[in-house]
Every structure is written in C-alpha cells, then in structure tokens.
Image 1 (tube, rainbow, N blue to C red):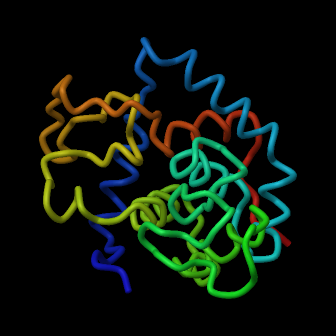
Image 2 (image 1 turned 135 degrees about the horizontal axis):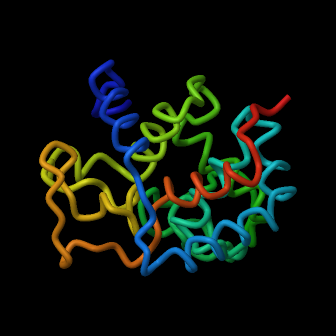
Image 3 (image 1 turned 120 degrees about the horizontal axis):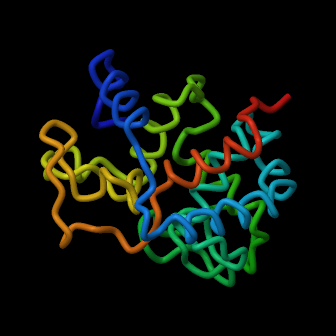
Length: 194
C-alpha cells in the first residue's frame, strides 16, 4: 500500500516540476544517448508492458534506474537473474527456477509493485508511480530534496520541490526517470498498451 496518497496537491506539484524541468546543460548529451538506448529496446519493453497494460516507456525508465538497462538483472532491484533476488524485495520471483528470463522477472517486479492495477498514465500519474516504485524516502524523510530517481540531471536535482534551492552535493549520478521519459516522449509518444 502506498505511504503517500496521490492527492490533487501532489498532482499539481508533479505537473509544476515537470513543466519547469530542464536537462542540465552539462548532461544533455548523456540524456540524449540514454533516450536513444531506451528506444532501441522498445520491442522488449512492449513485450512485458502489453500483457500487463503498462506503457513500455514506464518499464524502460524503471529498467534504466534499477539496472542501468542490463537485461541480466532483476527489474526489482538489479540483482542478477541467476538467482532469486537477495535485496529488497528478497526471494523474487517466487515462481519458477533460476536463471530467470528478464521478461519473467520484470513481469513479477511490476506485479509485486501493483503497476498493472495503476490506471493513471498521465504525466503526473507516471511520476507518482515512479516515485512510489523507488520508495517514498525522499518525500517522507527529506522533503527539502526532490527525488533524484525522478529529477537526476535536471534543474530540480538537489532542489526543494517547495523552495527550488539547488545544492551541488545533492546531484544524482544517474539521469532521473523523468528526464529519460521526457526525452523519449519527444521521439515516441506515450501510448497505452492494447
């Protein structure tokens, strides 16, 4: 169950941050290359997403954030597919025998996180879903920091969603899921499976 409710105020916050989001000039080339790599694996992401009614783009950005797009790792947390997951969530997938296919493990990861039950694939809905996938730690325990999972390599990385302060020491080494998604949307519009 979500620790944070998707309220009108949170929807508005996500939309405001999304509308004002800019890729860091120093990292623009890195984000462009990332978006190209995500598009190159579109068919594989669709193979999982179509069956679960999840847009492939959402799976692609989660795969990048959790596994650096490595298809030999569990989408749950980046553990190797040669065994069940060791890190949280441990012991996944429950069914089957290792080594797992990336597709079977990805379907399990997305199902455990209840993404097939989610039905708001708007920009704000996706941001809520992605932040929840990573966990609510920043929002609950460090509310002065915008989640690097969403906003890494952007003008929001290290910034307060409420105060827009930026601190170089809070920069994320990985471009956030929102940036990859934003760049990808320019090349391939979001569509719901089915």
